[in-house]
Amino acid sequence: ICACNYLKNNKPDAIINIVDGTNLERHLNLTLLLKEYSVPMVVAINMADEVAASGTVIDEKKLSENLGVPVVLISARKNKNVNTLMEKALSVTEIPENTVYETTSESEEEKRFAFISKILKESVKTAENKKEKLTIKIDNVVTNKIFGLPIFIGIIFCVYFFSFKIGGIFSGNISALFDKIVSKIGDGNPWLSLFSAICKGVGTVAEFLPHL
Image (cartoon, rainbow, N blue to C red; front, side, top):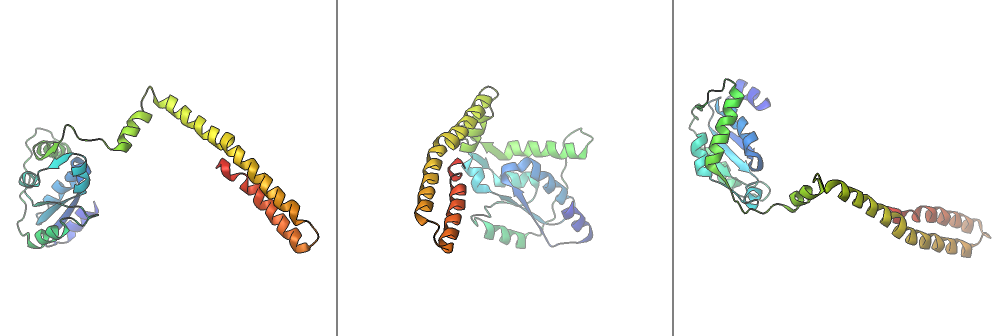
């Protein structure tokens, strides 16, 4: 909304539309909206390294043809193709043509998403043997309808066991250590008494640390 409002009142030389490559379908909706303002534009598909790692291949030439604007795959985090993007942004002068939606839907938003779905099928290929991320695999297991609850109960039991059973062993040793230190200090000197009190306080807190 902010970008569209700005374009209504200003006329920039060009637009660099940065798109999340891991979620093209949602973000290309803004790209189509920006095209309607008849300003030269370059689409930068960011996180291209993560897209490639997931096994997905984006045909930037085909996507560029379908969108009617230059497309550059970049990785801002790794500074990959950023210079290429800037060069294209500085040289682009062609005003993009209005997109023709081949659909009978009355809603403009539905028309845009139907068009996006169509061009992504032509421009983006997902490898059939792509490797799932470890986090996704873990999520699929721990959120499983059958195994999710037993796994949750098992985790809670392990936390309890290590905190109170295993941690209790260390807690007792720490308490005994500070008691021994305090007993050897004595109470003859005010400073020693103060130090003894400090040790008692530290010992009381320290014996709870293994439970954490």
